[in-house]
Structure formats: structure tokens, C-alpha cells
Amino acid sequence: MNGKSFIIDLSPTSRALDSLVHVQPRVSLRSTLGFMLSPAPRAGRVQQKIGFLVLAIFIGFSLADPNTALSQRRSGSPATPSSGSLTINTAPNAIIWIDEIRRGVTDATGRLELTKVSPGRHTVRVRATGFKEVTAPLLAGRRSLTVKLVKTADQAELVFQEAEGAREQARDDESRRKAEEVYRNALKLRPAYPAARVGLARVLLDLNKYQEALAEIDSARRARPVYPEASAVEGRINREAAFTDDAIQSFRRAIREAKGFQPEAHVGLARVLEEKGQYAEAEVEFRKALAQLSDSEPVIYQLLGAALEKQQKFKEAVVAYEKYLELAPQGSLAPAIRSIIDQLRRDAEGLEIIP
Image (cartoon, rainbow, N blue to C red; front, side, top):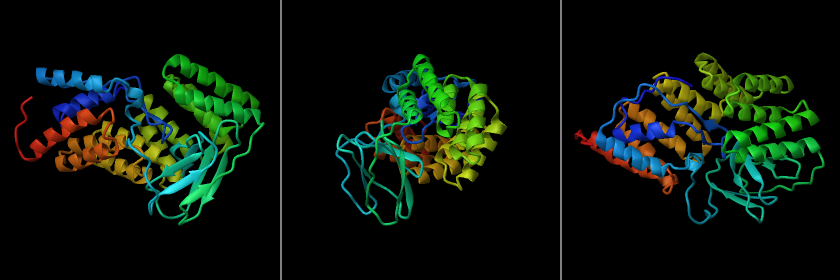
């Protein structure tokens, strides 16, 4: 999307980070949200001083692999079960969603331990290659769940699983086109397959085929009229195509359809509002997304921190950035964020920063 960049109020290091994080190729949040933040290069950059250019180069090396920059997790040994933990046992290498938020993949033994699972009832979805996808209830208070999967002979489902795997692994347009072809093969086998339509729409979005992507969303809705994920993806397509008002409408529809619980839409709406210079409103949406993601995506704290900086809420920005470092101390953004924090602390103390 060719929108104006609102980076004037950022610290020098944050401007460097902003210019590097928000350029093509797109970086991925697919591991949890199933989508990618993908603003195009911005116009109207502020001229940088020599010291800032050196810093930008340093950060550039630290962000050498943008496809993994936004999916960093805390390193170390698995968390031990606690009052807010959940252990899931199922097939090996199975993808686990809780309330449609992707939370991880089981290990070779079929086990996944999760922390920060909120109290109350949840819905768990499990998918493993070669098996029939299963959705199971998680009753309030339960701290373990065993989900048994059965082999599937459904060719449409098997090809769809292949397409999803191809999309997850795609890193260039050639591999995305291959994923597109596999999705189309699945849809030949089962034309009324809403999940495959949305998956294909995501690939088409990545290939900048906006009209084709919107057509797939329309087809998905014909089979499933109330479909929050489809509406969220529609919002992303409209944002990329520079249809800002339509994007806002789509994101709000996704949130409404999901009865408020749609972090992909909250993040997408926040990005649009941020691009419009509505930083306070963007902050609200980022915070809603964070509340729903259970700290599974540290990068949202970086995005929140930048929105707070633009409002000159430097102390709150430091808190957000420190949360990112707490969750992803070895993350690709960590070196830049540490520099940002140092500068913001000096800003908060009223000291002049000399590049």
C-alpha cells in the first residue's frame, strides 16, 4: 500500500527499525495469526544523519532474515505446567489452534505444552498431515487434553493440507505460485471448500493478485456467510490495494462476526489507523490484539511501542519494548529495540540525544 509514512515522532533508532521492518519482502505472522504484515515501502522519509545511517546498517544485518523476524519465541527449556498451562497430546507434528489462534506444533511424541491459557471454555483445533482435522472443546479448568486423530482418505482434504504446507513454507513468488496451483487442485476436488478458498486468497494476496483474491473471499462467503477469517483477509487485501475505507469496513466486519475476538483483524485495523495518523485508536486495537494472543506474538509489542512513540508516550513505549525483549530476548529485532529503549529513556528524562 502506498501510504504516507508517519515516522516523524520516532526516535532515530525506531525510524531505522521502521524503515527496515516495513519493506518488502513481507514478514510473517503466519505461525499464530495466519497472516503477514505487509506494508509497501513508504514515501516521505526523513533525512537521516551519518550516525543514524551507520545504525541503520547495523540493524539491517540484525534483520537479515525478515521471514523469521516476526515469529521469534522465548528460547530455553519447555515451560513447566502451572495454573495457566495446558498440555495437549495428539499426533506428532500436529498444528494446534486455540480459539482459532495458532499456538504451536506438537513434538515428535505428539505433545505440546502451552502457557498463559486463559480460564474458561475454549475450542481446540488439531490438524496433522494425513489425518482428518478435529475440533474439540476444552472445558473450563482442564489442564490437559488428548485428541485422537484418524487417518483420512478424503483427497480434497489431503490436497488442502498439502497446499497449506506449501503456503507456510513459501519464501518467494515461484513457491507461492506452486502453492496456488495446489489450492486450485483441492478446489477442483471440492469447489465448496471455504478454508481452501481463504488459503488461496492469502496466496493470491502475497502475489499481488488482489482482484482474484477478493473473488476467492466472495466464493468462501457463499459457502460460509459468517466467516471472520475471510473478512479479516478481505481487509488485508483492501489495505494492500490502497482501499483504506473498504479495509476498515472489512476489519470491523471480521471483529463483529467473531464477537470481538479476532486478533488478525485488530492488528490489521491498527495498521490502517496508524497509517492514517490515528495513533491513539491504533494503540487501542494493538492492545486488544495482545489481550487475545496470550503473548504468542512478541512483535505486536514492537508495533505497540512504535504507536506509543508517535504519541510521545515514551515511558509506555519503553514498557512495550521491554515486554518484547522479555518474550523474545534473542529475537531478530532485539538489538534494535535495546537501542530504542536507551534513547527513549533519555528522552523521558528530557535529555538531548546526539546521534
